[in-house]
Amino acid sequence: MMGTSEPAIPASAAHRIALLLAKHGEELARHIRRIVCDDDTAQDLLQETMIRAWKAMERLAPGSNERAWLYRIATNTSLNHQRSRARERAALSRHAAELAASRDSDGGGRDDADRTGLWAEVALLPERQRLALSLRVADELDYDEIARRIGGTAEAARANVYQATRRLKLKVRQA
Amino acid sequence: MSTTTAAERQAALRIVSRAFGALTGRRGEELRYAMMDDTPVGILGLARGARGLRRVSFVRGEDEFLERLLAENGDAQILRSDELDDVRRALDRYFAGKRLDFDLAVDLSELAPFHRRVLGATAKVPAGRVATYTQIATRAGSPRASRAAGNALHANPVAIVVPCHRVLRTDGSLGGYGGGLPIKEWLLRHEGALL
Image (cartoon, rainbow over all chains, first blue to last red; front, side, top):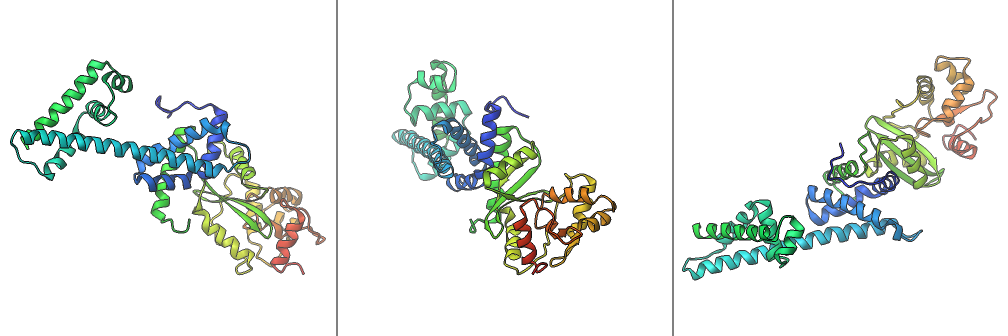
């Protein structure tokens, strides 16, 4: 049942994680879900929280409040996730606005509906293109760094960003 | 905790179940547990599976109870949950003297058949009454097995709810009790079986 993408955890650590998860899993899941409002994301984040907790366990002073400590990890993990999501969205919508503005200079009209439509187009981009675009415009990474994060070469990363931009521009013109 | 909706709780349980499976590879039965930290008889650990209540145990604390659950249910997925609020409420009513009998599904399927029969016979002894080890052995179908019946009662995994404390020696002395004799005595006085 264990897929290759699942983290490998030694048996004794699995036991400690099992104890922590058994004691606090349900309330942590509720806590995370209130922050991210999505079941699938909450599941990923709970898993991430438990892995972080396991890695940090040695640094937890004996006798300290385990539950409060777990809550802190869960909160940080969830808020970081929310922040990076928000950053990505903001940058993508900025990018969309720029594209729309460049179309304005071509003499076309522009309204919010266009932008909403563009948003949907961003969501429809192939995964690698969307990812490359967001790393480029949101995190302002250079192509070497983008390539390191998503795999492939810098040229491929540049091509992905180019294709994504071209596709969006095309959609803007068609609208 | 009381503001949590049932839907929210269900969602949280699903999330944690999947995360649990992914992290530990455990795919066994789901066992929910809860603690009662200050009852008149000390700390109680409660656990329930899909088919009913599996544990009411006298413990020193949550960690001891949890370690025991993990040791005894190797492949179960064990999770602290407020799903056992109804069990806690029933026990609260019992300790408050408002209602001395229990209307809870109990799951004894992990036990040997004789142990199940002994505990089944014990469950029929009403509050305020007592039975002897010999009587219980007889009702379980083995009149001469009173010592074995005593062992079965001592190993009762669902204390109080399956009232093994209502079983005494034929001479009227208390016999033994897993939670300690003072607790057996307290329970019997509480039920009015002892003055």
